[in-house]
Image 1 (tube, rainbow, N blue to C red):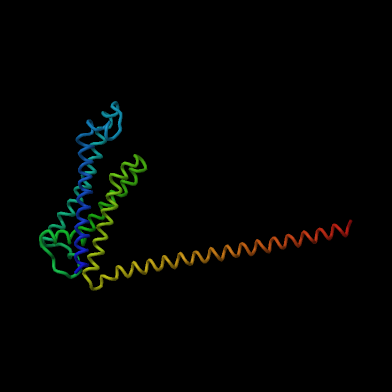
Image 2: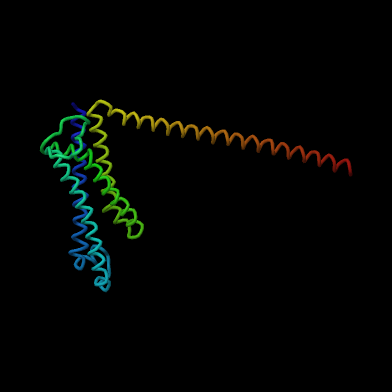
Length: 229
């Protein structure tokens, strides 16, 4: 029972993350496309003389951010349709469980099937745009776009994993795969450590015998010089 409650809480958090990311991009659209002339100096740190040249560019850029918000809203609407029992939707959370209705069905459908795929795509777009913006514009883009998208994506896939685990059946395979992956990473790390230690011992051993060999050659040379003299 507690696993289902935890999965439901994670799904609600994932929906909240989607709403937050969509709201952020609607706000960016408003600032860039509708209010740029008024906030160019205070928000975007632009010079007054550059505003006429940048207005059309910012309008276009704001519209792209609105598309991101529209895609996320589309995923949520799709989830609401699936949760409400609409036709043509993928299976709900929990594998073969019955499709739920109302708010709980919307939340469950958000982290499964088509809605999750749609949200993942738009989160990936925001993450890539945030990385590029962080490099070309500044850290403010990372804080405003990249971090919220990363958090929302983590909530989405965490909720999906929790829902699969709560559904039982073959869903534990995900967690088994994670354990195997962690075991393989641990083994690879240990193997690398052993190899490095062996290499270090080999280098130290070769260095030791190299010094001994040099000392032996030096003694031979000293003896030869003494005999010749």
